[in-house]
Image 1 (cartoon, rainbow, N blue to C red):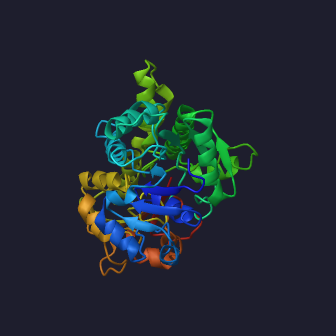
Image 2: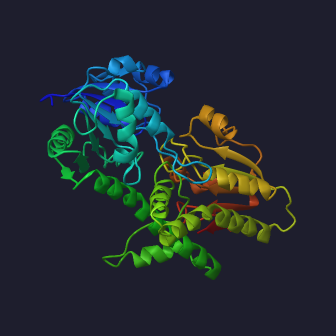
Image 3: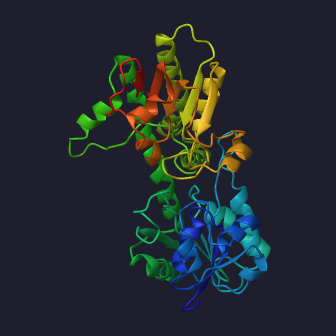
Length: 428
């Protein structure tokens, strides 16, 4: 194996691009993406995910391409493609299979193929390895080698970046593990944990998000209970959080590409071995039902004060899956929109972080270009706590709502505010 390897990164999204930029500070790195427009944008210094700045892109030695032939001759290939689920919540390994097929056709003797995509234990060795063997004509574990280093990217998080967190690595052999430790350690100050083997590393990753999903499900369930009791879950959590070992999870809709998806990978694996993953799937069920519970509660609150209203005009603030990121993947705000339309609401949506073209393309949603309106709404819903919405003054919020209207605050971002008495305020 080469002392100073050259590296390819396959997939330049939220995971692959930051990794490629940081590794390019120490190695010769080629970043590959099948989307030509994505490559063009990055070459022009623009990252629509917001994870890498224009100066970082322009000053990087990273080579960008959508030509697979430019991947030939490198020593390490790191695959960071998505691992979604299908309409039945069954793992869809199509992207990772296609990436393996592509890399299998260009790998050479001595190469290492590393997977960062979240999978269930066994995918790297039992599914990807055979694909690489078939396409390359080489023997896995003899002519080329496998590695796994689970991604831990948290979109929009400026503290836990890929160069600052501990990286878990696992190789098919001790030598491969040592090589990956040196490669990843070069960019993060050697904060490396070497897992016992690849399956262990795969399992560690998939339970990280499953654990978060279950904890959020608990908080979501108690938020619904406390709603019925007339208690704010945020007030309860604030009090409970004074205990030293209380886990400070917050209620909300679980979207995005990881937390709402990865538990299904673990559940699929469990079922394949004859185990019924009751806790995991119960958490998923609770979180999936949260949008309906919230929509119903807000609608009932509006109707309680305005029983005669039949076609309320409602403004939803926020569409992305979390605050201060442009990421629309698996956003659950679309479920809220669907619920309210089914309840007879005329819905407008505003989100300064979301790409209007993507909102229209993926969800057929026309985003409002601004919050200016000459016709106040019956109801506004603070759905995603972008900093811009947090900074809205009480007067600015009131101007959006009719005097008898409802201000609904899904994330508790305005719960310390004072609004005029003729407005109704709803919060979990």
